Image (tube, rainbow, N blue to C red; front, side):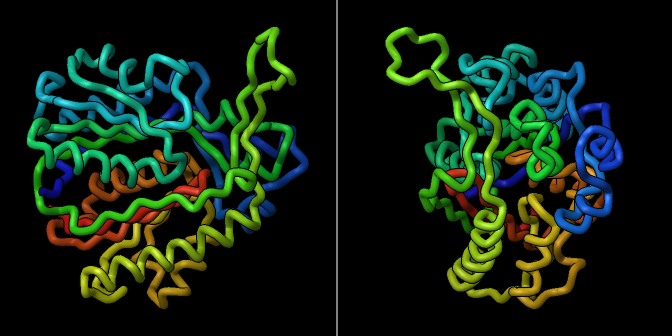
Length: 318
């Protein structure tokens, strides 16, 4: 049993922060950020909560699927961290939209959307679930150090959601982890535990950019070749490569390795920055809304993130 996407939606903060806005308090400038990342602006939460964004995205996805919250059998949220350590963000969304069904979070970092599709396929194949709501939501502004120009300029906030059900769109899925904790992580403290041998404070997102860049470029090419060999297709048979929006240079490097034209590699990182697991579904949602994706189009979707996690799927749009 496979799956297909029958409705999508997104939730975006109202405040767009430009590179010039950041340069007002950081030792950086628009040219420096654009040349190294391809990012021009990003959306940052002010009074919106991550649950607010998730509920907005979920509501649009359910409406576009022509369903109601009563029709949802399972909610899977992907996030680095919701508003609470517990309950899950999925439970918070379920309460707000009035859904009464199993709900849980998945933390696969930036590869979360691909992991959620693979997870949903397993639940659908059990025959016990019919309509699954996937929500990818991240508030990266709460994890970034806004005194560090090398990291804070990269990230933004946002959410996207889709409803999936039984179908034949999903032709291939591959999930993996190549363990390497030190190059990309977000440390958590141990509170005020009086018995802790060492006091640990909560920290900010840490990344060794060069090592992550090298991993990302190589893993996209490896994932693509593995998928194409399995399916018996060539890179030219894919209409769109929907890649994690981490850095425009990563996307360009992957495209050059595959020897394909730029039009097959859509981007929105220039307007959104890196929104971790929400990056790919926000881009996918925009492409559905503006009609770029049509029935029968073949999509290669690939992501990579802290862990180091990676994953890819091939979808033939229904």
